Amino acid sequence: MRKNRAFTLVEMAIVLVVIGFLMGAVIQGQKMFYNARMQRIVSDLQDFAKVFLIYYEQQGMYPGDENDTAFPPGDTANGDHDGLVDPGEADNVWQDLSHAMGVVRKASPVRGGVYEFGNQVFYGASSQNYVRVTNIPNRMAQSIDAKHDDGTYDAGNIRTDDAYTGSDDDLTVLYWRI
Ligand SMILES: [Ca+2]
Ligand SMILES: [Ca+2]
Ligand SMILES: [Ca+2]
Image (cartoon, rainbow, N blue to C red):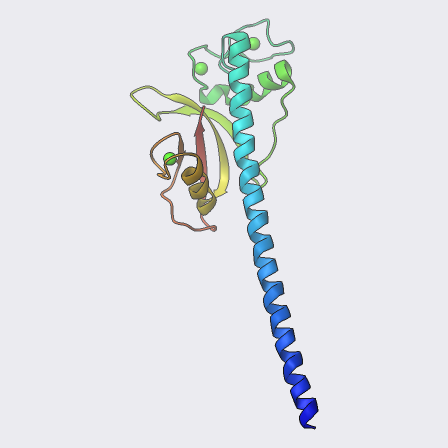
């Protein structure tokens, strides 16, 4: 009887250790999944910023903003060529990138967010172009800003619509200056 009881306690201890180990593994797995999706967003923003600039290098105009009626082939809309992606030109950035370079518009891997081009003031009196991602958790945006910029939501090259709260429930928009 006494031997049985001791055996049960050892078993319980083993079970507790196993549960603790599994919980740790699950938490670690969630963290890795979270970080992988965050890295995917950073890569996407970097890729889209890069093709945006390559297009400029090759054509002397930004996609969407370009006003070359003969390029790219199949183009149905042209911009005002003022150097900025204006609201009415934003969708045509994707069309130009697709027609000229075969770029495929992807969706964000988080909360159905989408990537969009546009412009706003980052420095000085005039605006700069950006690529942004919508529906990004506030904490994830904060981590990206801390790692790739200055960690401040309303300063530097990476900005968001809302102050950092450290919450995964608050969704915001992250702007990545090109
Ligand atoms: Ca054109
Ligand atoms: Ca424009
Ligand atoms: Ca910042």
